[in-house]
Image (cartoon, rainbow, N blue to C red):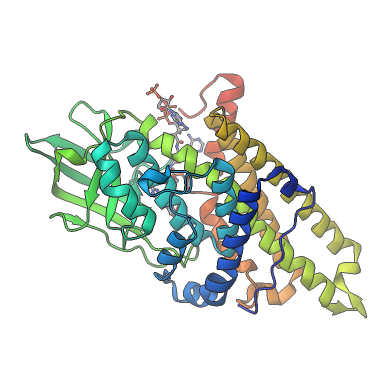
Length: 392
Ligand code: TGC
Ligand code: FAD
C-alpha cells in the first residue's frame, strides 16, 4: 500500500462525548496501526498470510481483553474503549480486528464469564499478554446460522470427557493454543469446553483459497476421540445462550470495527477526489462524486452515533441482543456500500493494492456473513418487534 495518509473524520464532534482515556486509547491504537500494520498489510494479504508479529503488538496496545478486569491481566476499561479499539484496528484491516475480537470476546469473555476461578487464573493473563492465543468453535459444516443443531458432542468417561465432531470456518484456528468449543452432552445440552493444542486426536487444518480476510488465518477444528480433562468444562453456563452471549460482545465490537473500515475508504476517496484531475478539474468538483462522498460521511456519522449510544447502554448493562443485531447489520452493510462507492471514485486505481479499498471491500464480504448473516440479524429485529419467529 502507498504511504498511509489516513485522517480521522468526526463530523458530529463525537470526540466531545469521549473521556480523556478514550481519546488516548484511540490515538495510540491509530498510531500503532499506521506504524506496524499499514506498511505490511497489503503484502501479507496478497500472500494470504497472517502476520504473527502483530500478536505481541496487539497485546502491548491492550487489544486483548480491554474490558476484562485488570486482576486477570485485562485492560479494565469500559465498552466504549473496547469499541474504539476495534474501530481503529479495522481501519487497518478487518482480519486484524478479527484476531483481537476473537481473543477478547470469544475466548477471554467466555472464560471470564462462564469459567471457574481456576480457569480464569490459568488462561486469562496469558491470553491478555498474547503468550497464548485462542479460537472459538461454534460453526459446523452443516450448522452455520442454526448452531443449535450442532453434532459435536462430549461423552462423560468418568475422569474425562471424550470429544468428537468438527467445526468449520474458525478464525485463528491454525495457530491457536486453545479452542473454546461448544458441544452437546449426552442429554443434548450445549456445553463449553476448553481444548488445548497437543491433545491427542485434535487437529486444526487451515482453510485455503479465501478471497476475503486474507491476512487472517481460518481453519477447521477436528476432534477424533479427544480426551479432555473434566476441569476444562466451563461450569457456569448451559445451553445455546452460552455461545450466543459471547456473540453479543463480538457483534458489538464489529459494529464499531466496520466504522473504521468505512472511514478508511471514505478518507481515501475524499483525498483522491481532490487530487485526481479529469476534464481539467478535480473529480471531487463534479456533483455525482460529491453525492457519493456526502452520503458516505452521512452514513458513517449515523453509524458512529448508533455505536456510541449502544456503548453507553452496554456500560449500563442495558443493551439488548436485538439492539446489538441492529447495529451489527446496519454498520457492516454501511461499510460495504461505502467500500463499493469508494472503489468507483478511485476508478481503475481502486482495484489495486495501492489503495486499501478493494481489500476492505473483500474483507467486508466475510464480515457481513460471520457473527450472524445480514439476513439473520434482520430476522432477529423482526422477531423482536413482532414477537413472531420467522426462522423456522
Ligand atoms: P433461540 O431458541 O432463539 O435461543 C436459544 C437460547 O439462547 C438465548 N439467546 C441468547 N442469549 C444471549 N444472547 C443472544 N444473542 C441470544 N439469542 C438467543 C435464548 O433466550 C434461548 O435461551 P433459553 O434459556 O430459553 O434456552 O435459538 P435458535 O436456535 O432459534 O437460534 C436463534 C438464532 C438464529 C438467532 C441464533 O442461533 C443465531 O444467532 N444464529 C447465527 C449464528 C452465528 O452468529 N454464528 C456465529 C459463529 S462465531 C463467528 O462467526 C465468529 S467470526 C469471528 C471473527 O473472526 O471476528
Ligand atoms: P448458512 O447458515 O448456510 O446460510 C446461507 C444463507 O442462508 C445465508 O444467506 C443465510 O442468511 C440464509 N439463511 C439461513 N437460515 C435462514 C433462515 N432461517 N431464514 C432466511 N435465510 C436464512 N464461526 C465460528 O464458530 N467461529 C469463528 O471463528 C468463525 N470465523 C469465521 C471466519 C470467516 C472468514 C467466515 C467466512 C466465517 C466464520 N465463522 C466462524 C462462521 C460464520 O459464523 C458462518 O459462516 C455464519 O454464521 C453463516 O453460516 P453458514 O456460512 O453456514 O451459512
